[in-house]
Image 1: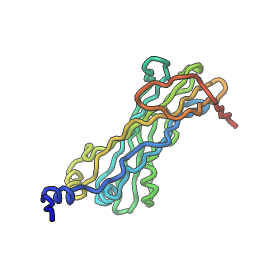
Image 2 (image 1 turned 90 degrees about the horizontal axis):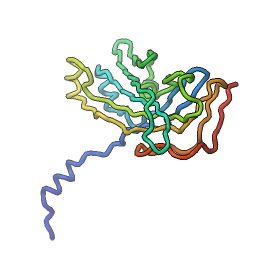
Image 3 (image 1 turned 120 degrees about the vertical axis):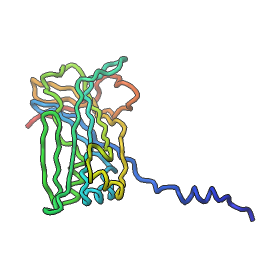
Image 4 (image 1 turned 60 degrees about the vertical axis):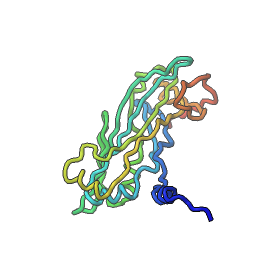
Length: 219
């Protein structure tokens, strides 16, 4: 009988359980009569370990980096604006409620809830975040947005919160960029035209003309 080297057995025992990598999905760009807005969903990010740390008194913060770009054929796309949205939640042990806040340029929102699932949803959702006035965009150009998210364990934490993380370790994460479809904005008519082409790879610019455009008329 062949002997299996001890080092192989040790490696097998030390292999950590795989965990789903956080990823941004359903990133959308749309316009109303005044603003261009972004939406998106972060998945596989708010783990049970994070909830345990939150209940221990550690505040959690997710950072969302957002870029609005103009599509340029055959050249690098032009970055029109950059912004960051910060989602933070802290658990109030006396009220037994989750205190959520969202902050960014021209954005400040606070929500208190006793529901843990709503807490997770708030932390992992971007909804109608304003990026730019529609009147600042050229109606003859096509635009898209890309978003990434990150969390750093001891992001500005002070004692004793940073000390608590020693007992309830949680993973840092940083997602890759996720991009929306292209849209054209027509501010004088109050509605955008959006292409139905699939999301593009981060490695290259959008190419080709507008096809299968869908206009979403305001009621």
